[in-house]
Length: 269
Image (cartoon, rainbow, N blue to C red; front, side, top):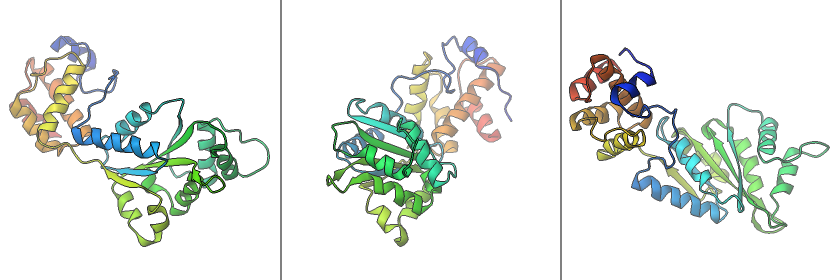
């Protein structure tokens, strides 16, 4: 493995404020391709219409950042949301966690599902509820169907909440099964995040460099091409490779990330 240095050494060597390929500094506006911007706008529009959606992508494809941006763009007066990463929770525990995230009282008698249904009722002009279920590909169909029962207020004949299912590509395959038709028909759009393509890898690297107050030309074009090929457009892999390139440059006392440096890092990844 390529030896690494700490972030302070990297920043000192390159004379920059932050180490570009770490998650230790804030970025006001995250990187998004044109396709991802359109996808985000579509999701916001669908939620505004009371619809539910799913979004799938490989690990490291940017799903978490997309969801964070989505929720951050919702008007707090009009929406409230619960973000729940599924980790094998029992149905009742999952419902309780949703209640906790939405500050819904769980004391006293009555089922949690009933309490949530009452809280989501559109009788009052309160904020519309959005529940984000991360790692949804691991959820049993019965649990998903139970949650979808909360998305429609039969008495008022209106949408009472929206679900955003987020998970690995296996989620799309699961939803396509005939036994999950009842779930599939409740999802207005099944969206997919693709890997970064061609020039998008370079745009992503330069975006991170700019955010860290570093030169956008720190990586040569050939070095970027090598990272593109080796990462297959996966953002998390790009971050790791580019960060290791900068570490190796510090060790070699070089100020430019060349294809030679990138090739050595990629060969050892």
